[in-house]
Length: 137
Length: 57
Image (cartoon, rainbow over all chains, first blue to last red; front, side, top):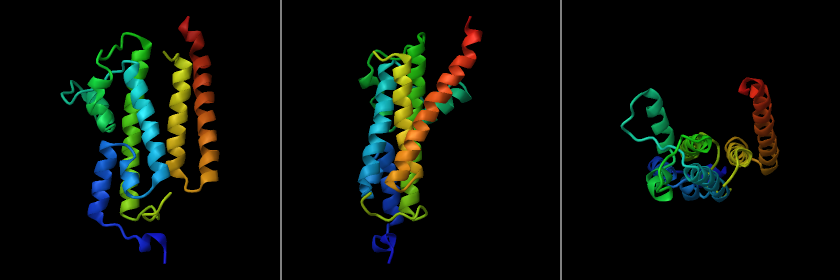
């Protein structure tokens, strides 16, 4: 009997884990008992997002002016809680007149896209297509 | 405040670690992949920086 057969995952639970993983990076993996991955993903996304915001990177809003702004919004919203707390973490707002602000924009977008990749992996694990069961990692 | 190189190093470290955990299942494979990706990020970024250097003047 394989590990995934020992711990069959309910598709509904996999979707809940994916939503949790989007909102709080790593939480989806934690719900699937992938503790190591949960810690690494949370730290990776959090470090990129926090540094991006502290460098006064731009955070795109949903009322995009063009397609590039919309892509930026889709990348940024992937960061979950960091997107919603961006104004609290960086109350000064964006400053892309300097190079570091521009780099901060990229770092924050990278954090969002990285978290979206993690959410996809939660779905893969949850639906059993990754060949990993609900075991500690 | 971090300078640009320090920012790039942190970026490379975070992304290479996440990629290693996403793509590899065994810990020794993850470690090898993370180190390889981290060094590749740095080498490519510094290489592209030098390639662009003549155009900055």
